[in-house]
Picture: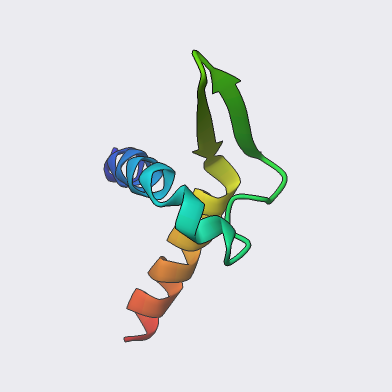
Length: 63
């Protein structure tokens, strides 16, 4: 259950930071969704969130 909450929080944070993160290549992976709705661009960086969460978990485990 904790991983689900962590993934939801990460999705929320990464969605807000997507314009900056796209310059770094995050948000362009297969599994990242972006679409235009009501004149606004929405993105759901699902795969990027998973990759960054795994990376953060590995770093935390090593420390």
